[in-house]
Image (cartoon, rainbow, N blue to C red):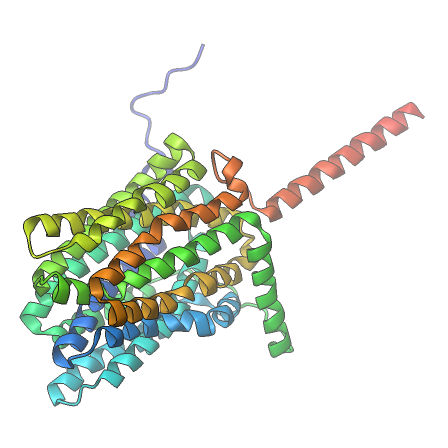
Length: 453
């Protein structure tokens, strides 16, 4: 007969919210959320700065987006190898400081009357480079701060708060542009990087000094190859990488011209642009919280299929945006559905990759994935700008959003097509289990042989 549990028994530590009981995770959470909020403000303010103050063309606006993501293609692989070698906390502090200086220079240049498009382009490149190192460091540091049992909760919390930051940044970005002007709103992003810097500074976790190879150049190339080999030989990781690359090409194809489309084609005001893009933040928050429930209900592998093949079909509502209540509503529904599916899928796959990827290869594997995933983002931005210049903004929106539901078909080539759930044990753990089972079997055989003798 089971023993009844006392109703007055104290709650376990695991029952307490992760943010309350884990100080370092709380610091990392604040840094991630404030940084994402500032980036969301800039994603509205930077294009509006180029459009309204410098009279930039749609292609020039898309080029700013491409420049922000180009560092993933240029230095992503090298960054992953270096992040696996270097202490992450100091590296993240340098990245926040560099981003703060670059962004704060924009309102300063505007006040002095010397702001140019070239400065915006250089700022996008510098902050994009800092993002490569910061995001890689943060992704490698997270599984070292949070134990395996808490990783799903940590990823859900981080994705939800980042989407809340996006919501505040997008909706507040339009209001800030109206109140402070596009360049003035960039000052808010600078303040967000300062807050992120302070939060990273508060991390108490200290990593051990990483072994530095004697022949740096040769070993660096070898380490990069190891990360690439694991990423593209493993059927699960390879499928996610290729699917993500295709999806990012389509996503950035429309996102690079989205502000120009909403302002010039749909005739929406800056405040309305912020509100409808902020609606996507609500979808992202819902997606982050719904991911674990969807995975538990349908299985994580099946949930990923729904999120990559099903809900993105609603993206076809976005090109119907117009300066009418119905047009605004259709765009908001389509945009929210896309953000919901992207965030929910990312939440599920982030936990999978943290559990599945060998710890020693995680940084290099993540940047190898990002090299392909994010490498298509500047290409997508240029594609969107080129289509907008040649065909017009609305036809370009139709063509790019139509690609989104097709990207999930790539996952049908992976081993997960036979699975209900994604594996929770990586190849390194399976090898250890096989070795232990083999040793145990050998031991049993030896004992049996001795007994027979």
